[in-house]
Amino acid sequence: MTTVSEFKPGLEGVPVTLSSISYVDGQKGILEYRGIGIEQLANQSTFLETSYLLIWGKLPTKDELVEFEHEIRYHRRIKYRIRDMMKCFPETGHPMDALQTSAAALGLFYSRRALDNPEYIREAVVRLIAKIPTMVAAFQLMRKGNDPVQPRDDLDYSANFLYMLNEREPDPIAARVFDICLTLHAEHTINASTFSAMVTASTLTDPYAVVASAVGTLAGPLHGGANEEVLTMLEEIGSVENVGPYVDHLIATKSKIMGFGHRVYKVKDPRATILQELGEQLFEKFGHDEYYEIALELERVVADRLGQKGIYPNVDFYSGLVYRKLNIPSDLFTPIFAIARVSGWLAHWKEQLTKNRIFRPTQIYTGSHNETYIPIHERNCAINLEGETL
Ligand code: ACO
Image (cartoon, rainbow, N blue to C red; front, side):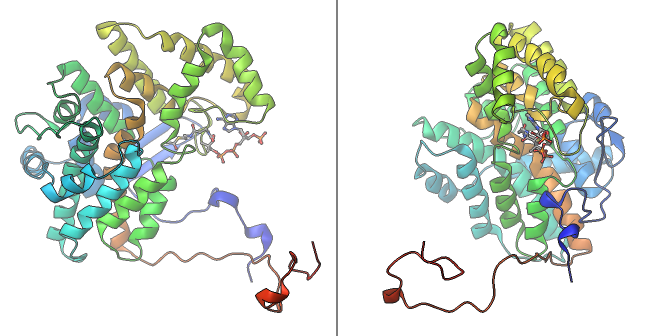
């Protein structure tokens, strides 16, 4: 019999899998993908090479990488029926909802559930990594009333996404910075959306349902949705002088400061450090951002007020400033997080399949027993479960 003392809200600290995909040390601020430090991957790898590493567990040879990149390039286009379906989405809908629906729709076209066939696994991986950016960019253009732009085969993964989004070829530095952002967001152990992907995967459903489920989970403001909220918060604060009173008000009303705090990290998230450096590079090249001064002051004030609780910037704090400098609208920040995290979700999907057991946790029942059903015509006033009239 399970006891209340065994219950861990939010499953905090409860191991749910054995995994060799990524590693976090929240006290030392270390993040590794397949044993390689995130700083090395950010500096030296590309998003597609890192995705290969995460999903197949090793760095690709030159030939393997060329082949993988070629397959992704080949599968970037989306079917006109998916485009037509997306045209019917309301332009006021959130792009994460559009992405969740479109990702699920891929399952209508490609689902075979041949989960024991490595070719099927590879095809699904390639299709999802290739098509998700095209769907995000297509929704962005269609909600503005424009036709989507077709992917360009001469551009690499990140440059092509920025091209499809802005209808012009990006500056190479902007494309490289964006690619590093994708690498930084590609994987992060058993967070909420990855767990959601694993639970869905454990039923042996198709990978499009796995990704759609994870996208829906990522959308929430306590998870991937925080990056969008950070920018709203910086806007609300408006000036460096307002930072102190703003933070004090949030603390006094027990509200969360977006972009701060993490279940695992009790120091500054290493990805936030790299994103901050990337932001500074962009400001140097393309001009300053007034919100950066507010963000710096916010980091200082929060460390002063909440540092003893281990509340420091997480990955979502500086990413919005980087994307803003790349002219990306704020409600696309979370879909971009999803573009990156698809690789991590797929790595966990693949790992889950190698040792699958369906997730079926338990509960501690706190309700009553042996209640009597009262026919509706006798329920002329509200009655609680103890039968008392309210
Ligand atoms: N602002 C103010 N106080 C905070 C914050 C924050 N952002 N985060 C945690 N705290 C405080 C809590 O109030 C709590 O204080 P208490 O012990 O005095 O009650 C303590 O720190 C522990 O907080 P929990 O909410 O229990 O921590 P948990 O591990 O459950 O939550 C989470 C982690 C959800 C990320 C939380 O820090 C948060 O809501 N942050 C803001 C939203 C955000 O930035 N999310 C993105 C996270 S990164 C990602 O998902 C990609």
